[in-house]
Length: 89
Image (cartoon, rainbow, N blue to C red; front, side, top):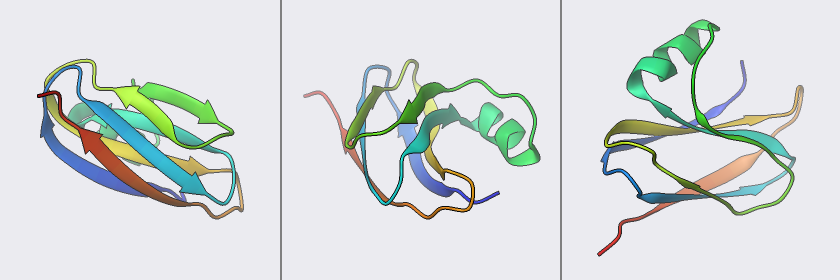
């Protein structure tokens, strides 16, 4: 499977993650470590996010823990992406 993976390490609940993309519309997911393993095996997984046609995408981390941002472009397509994490003061 063609996808981009951005480890976010340990993050607190409510932290905002911004994903900027160029190329094609894509699926953007925030996935915790347990669900990332399921995603990479091709199994069912839980995530925050969905399919986005416009950039940037802003998502909030729902619970404290280790998270990864994943960007999956349309089949046979290429996407370039970058990720910023905004921690509340």
